[in-house]
Amino acid sequence: MSVLGIISEYNPYHRGHAHLLDEAREKTGAAQSVSIMSGCFSQQGQPMICDKYLRASAAAASGIDLVFELPVLFATGSARDFAEGAVALLSALPFMEHLCFGVETPDISLFREIADCCVEEPELYRTVLQEEQKKGQSFPSAREEALAAVLGERVREAVRKPNNILALEYMTAIKRLHSPLKPCLIRRTADYHSGSADSATTIRNHLAGLVTGDAGSWIDPYLKDVLPSPSYERYRSASGGFLLSPEGLMPYLAARLMDLPEDLSGGELPLDMTAEIYHRLRKLTLPMDYTDMIDRLKRKNETRGRITRCLLHLILGICEKDRIALNKTATESLYLNLLSAAETGTSLLRDTGSLSVITKKSAFRPEGPVTTRLWELDCRAAFLYNQLYYDAFRVQLPAEMRRTPVIL
Image (cartoon, rainbow, N blue to C red; front, side, top):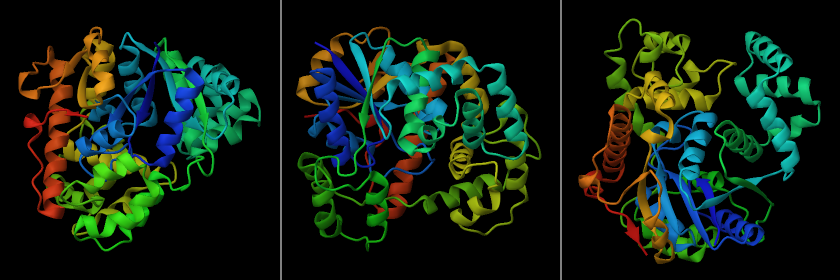
């Protein structure tokens, strides 16, 4: 009996996710599914639309057998960090066989060719990559030029499309980590064969345009159309608010800006923050809003996502040395924080290999300084998210150490 894996944010779980799961089951023949899901903050460094346990339970109600949390160090890292962390977790589970993901170009031989080039980095690739970055190109743009120089113009379309970009990171992570996972590419279609074509971004943008108030009165008409029925029912039954604004991060950023040291060594810099970004940050004069800060910090050779990620890392105290330490210890420092499970998936928990599965947080005892630090950062992220949620909606989410998985 095979098991398929999906790496996700489920922000929120919508009809496109349901389509991917259905297609993945059909293509792989897998009877069960496991998702590694980002918790409190997205890969762009933004607070998630709502509580991670609610999002995970919506996924479980819609067919995902087990949902584990991707540690915040990976979940808010670069595309490479995001992919490698999630692939490492799935690869460590003895029962996993497939990794399934959506793409605009379902050509696995092309993805393998590109992934080989990214991992092996032939001399021409390295030369062009460095030259383009010296010209002020962002890393994604510079990498596109380097890949085109080695593999030809045919790769450009493949590496420009958003789902393809993340798919390439998954393929590269599988190769770099010598993972046993078998990649399964699912074509992302316009209508997902399921009615609404709204993506998670479209859904969030639509909700942002609505007048927030009583959740039940404003989410029902729209979300009922764009979410699978089981997922919709989980969101509908929830109390509290939806769609935290990243502007809520600004007071916490302002507090950090007031005591930044004049200089930091490389390992002490917030993860993803260069010395140049750091010095520009120190020169900013408060007050300002969050969006204005990003606009003032961004330069041509930096993506907006990189700026928002490193600002969140500044608040949480996630530093470059955290990634360096984790790279040295590899998968023995990882664990699985179970967020939700369907009854059909609980049998899988009997054999999780060397990874600890956290079901009762107060009983979890991380071993070693790297694992302890990874868990500390996850708890810190949950604390910040809960405070942001309270700031926005005056609703107190349960304290992280008292949370238990949602079993459906």
